[in-house]
Length: 467
Ligand code: GLY
Image 1: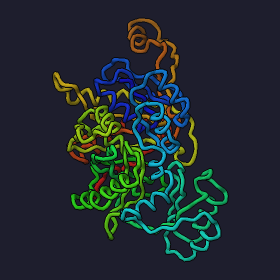
Image 2: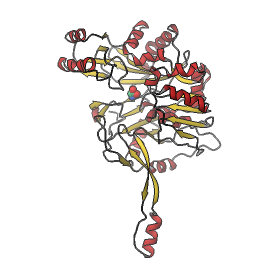
Image 3: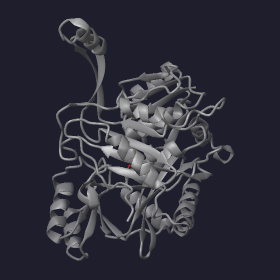
Image 4: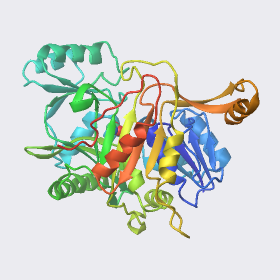
């Protein structure tokens, strides 16, 4: 099969790496390019493209020209813009919700109404399109309160407001200054709830949902949940907060009514569903739907998958998920994000990444591939790139003088061209390790992170550190 992966962040790097474990893949295209993807069997199946993830017409033309058999879409924006409708109209197979179903993430007020219609527990909220009405409402609510942009805002559209003054500023920025370019013209003012957050993911084909192990990500920049919100600085899977009782509550109060709602509303949803939940003192509540995999949750989830991701995605797309094998191991995985100097505030100067070779050494010293079987697992330590580019640099030969010392030095450092990976900004890369439990995975993940260096790199040191 020729497979196209749309999107080039850490999440898509992880999906592509898992797909490449399948012997069914003859070629895997990823667009835009992600330099972290390599063929684990050395068969040269990877092709990097440069079509933007939101250029649906060009993606369609490419998929048709290349005879792509299956497309997987990582980010929410092309799903919300209807890439699934466009591809299916042309008879192409693609995994993801169609435009209508993607509104569950793309329009928060639509999602809230859906939750209310199907009795899914969620925080109380009011939607506003009028700035004066919203401002008056802010005077009646309890603080902290939450203001959410209704549309897609690249993970920045949810703001916790401690005071009325800050809430007013936030409202002004979203509704008047239009910082989210239309996404904040409609907003929700929502009750602030507290409790551990658990991300539940399912493969869903419109009839059958297969749950993946629950995960928890770390959204704040700094240790002890200090600093600004980010796209996610790390993750642990399974989430220690997801007790069997809570998992059961999730299935009954959130998953079952979600599936019921999709059936009743005839949504064409064949993809990944991400339920952002919170275990509050009043019970489990749904914070949001996302219609895609999470980042960095995917990087922790997929190393635990024991079956063939290609088979699973084909089953999702063709509505036959009930027949697919879809087991996850009962090990644990921990992901640590290494971010660039100025993340999340602004851009950072490019910096060479060193020490990546050490990760191969850690893996080489690890479990061998089982004899005679197709190895379907990602390695114990995997690195996913997000803000990374590749350059070829020329290094002159060392000039150490003559004699034996000179000959040895030249042999060790002969000069010539070599590839270097450059951190270009944002959440540059993520390092994931698998272990028998969270503490083993955590130890190995931090050992690996300790080997990778680039100027300005920073990461949290308390991922999966359990009290
Ligand atoms: N980890 C949060 C997200 O992917 O939205």
